[in-house]
Image (cartoon, rainbow, N blue to C red; front, side, top):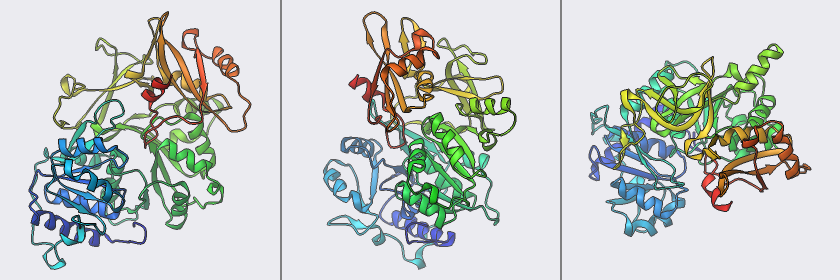
Length: 494
């Protein structure tokens, strides 16, 4: 379902078969790249599966990217055809002279020389005239560019085998039984959105697609469509909890609410557990584009704050973790010399799985290690029960007077203060120490918190070298579309 459009699986299959035949008719051949620039829609879903059916590589573009970034991604990917939603037609027209494309096609009505998608779709009678193209498992299915917040975006080549390995290893195949109703609000240009598309169709679940997230509409759809499964990023979760209609919404159908894409503030997930119906099963998923989505999961049982006082305390501690590895994933932690670390030792998280990307388009993968292992660039540690705790990005590590400080540790303490809504910590240059710690803090509305209060609060909970030496109150933290804090912006403003 998308807006007023409701399609059966048979109708969707017909649509993608007709589109695949149409793409072949305009000259696209196996291995060619088909790009898409639009918000989520049923046509976007059909476009991906039509590309796969025709043996094409699908390039989902970030519609929030700047024009130079879009130009770089489209041209570096050597895209042949660009599908564009109505709201981006003028943008596409401006970019067209710089793009090395065969054609731009509108997903909607089209303008000028940009013809509509309907004009290339094969007639119903001809939909089966082109058989599905045989493709090798190692051919690139999706070329997905990662966020280019500090450098040019990197094109991650994900193969048919990568997606098959992820979906079949972790999701039950459709068997005709009722698998519920999924609400998809994460953009399809992100790995979480793309895998949500695949997993929900694989398991035979009804899928309700939102063009973009809006808290009020999300709540309305959960109630009206009797949503059972959904995935949100941390900023979405907070907006839902803060929405004035939250307490008035019937959320009784909701069974599984997964979250990920960025670290979830402890205060937000604790509030969510207390605010959503008790039967809702929360799932924290951690992964990377390069690994075809989730690597570790903190499951529903770990979110149920039940049992003895000691058990509840342990679960509260684990809410700060990213859970344990999925069955097809191995996780270890290593130091800067490449030596494996034992339990509770902070180091770089490295992983091994059958679904690591084919590589980056046009560049080497400098994170690839020997024997199938890959460095994630994330810091963390593993406790004695196999739970993995995230400590921030390796590049974000603060080194003060030779001491390594993970921003996440300081941020966790700051956000445990009842007057703090959000916090982000960065290292700033210091002649004496090399770097010192500066915290940017968003305080809760109408809360009398001072900088001195927070410095004193941290003084009793952190080692002296980990305490922020500067604290600045801000109205909001700079973030990307999925809620990841843009630390580079904070450093530049520090």
